[in-house]
Length: 371
Image 1 (cartoon, rainbow, N blue to C red):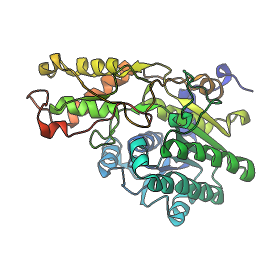
Image 2 (tube, rainbow, N blue to C red):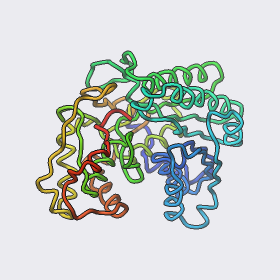
Image 3 (tube, rainbow, N blue to C red):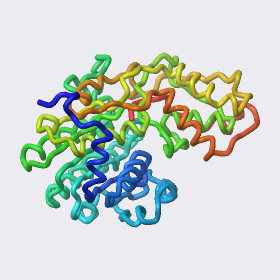
Image 4 (spheres, helix red, strand yellow):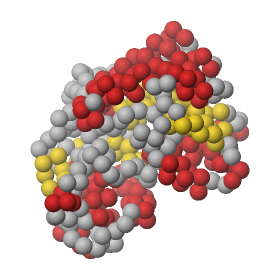
C-alpha cells in the first residue's frame, strides 16, 4: 500500500492531467463546487462536459467561469441542460467520459426534512442513474460528493471514516445509501469509485440567499447588506470549514490515484480544525469591519437549535492524506479572507445599520450544519 510520502504531489497530478487530455463530466456544473471544478479542469486544457438542471445551480456561475478563461479553453466546454433523474440525460452526458465528477444533488438537511421525496429522487435515484450511465459508457473513474452528514448520530470527534451512526435526516440517509451503491457498483461492475465526504465547504460563488444558504455566505451577505445575523443554538457548536480549492484538490487526486487500495473508499475532505460559530462570526465581522465600521459593535441574534443539526463536527483527514496524498492548502482564516474579498466585490453594500427591521429579520440564515 502506498504511503503519503510516495504519492505524487498535487502539483505533479495537475501536470499529469495537463499532459494527457481527457473528457471529464462534471454534474452540477452550474453549482458552487461544480463550477470551480469545471473552471480548474478547463485551465488544465481538459475537455469538460457540464450537466445541470439549474434547480440550485446558476447561469451566472458559468458566466464567471467563462470570464476566467481564454476563448480557446472555453471552447473545450460543452454544457447540457439536463436532469440526473432522467436516465437519458445521464447517458448523453456520460458518453465518451473518461472521468465522472458527480456533484449534482439537493444538498440541504432542512429541505430534506421538508421534502424527503425530492431529496430521494435527486440524491438516490439520480445517483443510481448516473452510476449506470458511467458503467455503460466505460468511464474509468467515478468520483462523487458524499457528506459529513453520513456520520449521522455517531458522537465521535473527530469523525473517522469507518465509524458512522444512524442518519439524522433524509439528506444524511441519501448520502449513506449513495456510498453503499457506489460500493456495489465497484464490486459488481468493476467501476472504480471514490467518495468524498465534504464537511462545511465555502468559497466564492456560494449562494448567500434563501432559507437553505450555508452559514458563511449567508453571514457575509447579511453583514454587507445590513441584515441581522442569526445563530441557531448558543454559538459553541463547531464545524470543520473547508475552502473550495481544497475540494478541487481532493477531486483531482481521487480522479488520478492508481493505488488499488485507494479505490472503493470514502474519505473525509476538510481541514481538520474545529471552529465554533461564535469564533466564525467574529472572524467574518473583523474581516468586513475595515470596509464597514458600523460592524464594530455588531452582535448575532441567537435562536433555538435546529432539527437535524449536530453540536460538534471535525474531520480526521489522515486517511485521505495516506491514500490520496490530500494536503489542504487553505486554512479557515486564509480561505475566509479570499472569500470575503469576492463577496465584497459582488454584493451591494449597505451603509446603514445592522438590520433590525422586521423585513430584514425575515431573511433566514443557516447556522453551519453539515453540507
